[in-house]
Length: 375
Image (tube, rainbow, N blue to C red; front, side, top):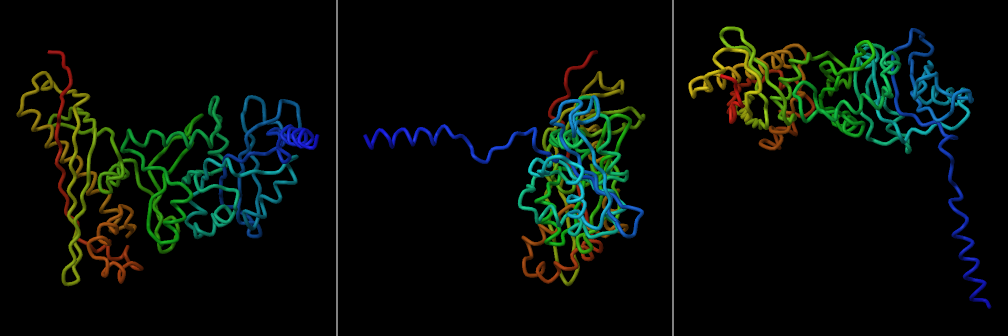
């Protein structure tokens, strides 16, 4: 009898379900943050919180008609202060464990230490380290308010970086955890720059963050981002577009490439030699010579592609070394491996050493396929 009673009681426990469960309709899921500067001295931060719509039309907390999200923009002295104030406008608690994107405006990113701006998110035991962090030279609140058909702006921005393996025009997405590691080590790095274009959002170059100051110091164009990817070897594949001697457009699809950086430190002189090797094929050729893909013509195309890579590298190196004085191409990694003791002594002022280093580079392009052509 006791055994039967015990079995019944155990079965009742299984039927109780989750004692601490909550309906998703009773939660406010944060999917995006936007951080801008405020004009108020008392409340210097303008913070936008993007929340996924879980309510039906007409209910309290419902999103505007046709939208899958709501934006709440408040000003305050700190992020935590603003989030607490936000709770006065929402019927349910705020949850940040579904946060996808964090957008930081250039003005506030160049004014404040990024580790301070992101301190609340890094300390919060609910917020994950996976949100994408991007910079914008437009208002972050405007980016989050982009009316993208059938899309939530924060989710849309995050999804753009699924294409990073097929183009050299964007840098790999930087997640909150990686950004925190860079800030902790005072290592310079780049963040993708996004901008609003009518009813969509696109990646447009990158912002440069100087490690020692932990602040935004400038921007790189899309072409300069290509140069960064060739120098750092962080990209995977993409297109290289160049012109022939008659100004005809040639498109070379990079299937794979590798970048080797060889440092040399002797008598206080720091030099780097960069070897870039790429393989791919011609996917478009607007010249009449395309009808005759001779070995000589293919060699000419390889040479022109190499010259274009060298041009991209030259342009971005000049800007990084002379204007921004920041090593965002991770030359420090190769130097640390080759000269660990010297790097330890130079680490705190590495950007200064990088800006004065002599850098040589050579690109080697191989065309392995010319594709089908109409003769």
